[in-house]
Image (cartoon, rainbow, N blue to C red; front, side):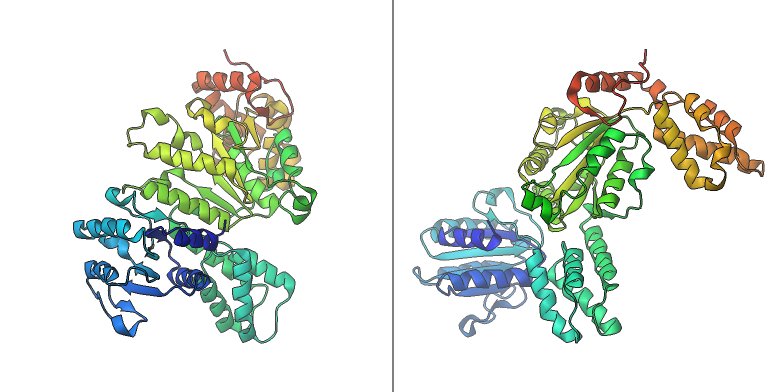
Length: 500
């Protein structure tokens, strides 16, 4: 159901008090006006704290700097007359006892009248005593078709028309931005060179990065990593490569649903985060990184509002990759968290979205401690697949050494005894192999020479891998994966080393 359909339904059903959180005040008011026209040209009255009521000569300025008077004015309207009353920024006054009491009185009175009161606010902030009388409606960011219409409306000012491919690229780059930001960045493009060109797509992407940073919930993460940068994990890479075109129109025509995502489980340093970055780069999709801790706020209802904002933003940017690193730290041990159920509500909203989402948002979640995750997170339907990323075997360690040394010393790669290095580093993770190379470089740099195999072996002898300091946790993960609870990311179905 679209926003207009949902709002019209609520208006016809005589929902008295509606709360719509959005920063796009102008666009929302146009949408409300459109709904009002479809409902027999229902009159719309707008109030704000500075100007009072507007657009009506009989009431111009009434209720200026007096929010209670603005509510009392509604009582003066004939009971049978239709009306939609818009109150801007009214969330600032909801804590006032007189305002709260008047709203609850209006809620009862307007149920039998063809009137609706709509509060427009930049964020969701509802006191506990008003949660039962206010109906919250989410106003989504502009869709691709809305963005296309806005760009085409602005194009006549550019002189020459743009090609269909450039228009498509502009629309895709602008998804996730408000119409005001889109107008602003396109105006910047026109002011700079008098027309819209291919290079302007990057300006729009930079505006998108700025917009996402301002939410303080998601990060627009640049990626340059490729599938070839991942040493080993051949089963996982094959699974991902088969889904490279899964977001295309051709896949939809074939009948394939949008991929949901995958969970990567394993100990730290085994390449889970690297895989998330490589997926986005290989599929040519934007990568959004979610720090789940940012979802939680101190005000009542703020955490749930941020969760909905995150979901709306991710879906507006679709198709995209949503990377949730170490999800177990956010939702682990729900029963023991004394936060009045806030974490449970956020978790419930999140997993319901995972199960029901139809948008092309591919979720990549990583976890180190599978024991702490609620069972609901792991059941089928939340993710397409759960992969276990274990410690690399000897062949994979050779691949990891080769990847790093090829990047650092491509001209003399053959001088390193990679087979011996892999043999002498049992139980090393990919991150520990990388740190071994860094340590060897420090050793040789201090002696004013290039590093060699002996330096790498010496550095490896000084590193105590996590496999030895966290034996119990790793043993549990290995037993969990070997019991068939997850697919193995590596082709070798046997674990190369059993820890005692």
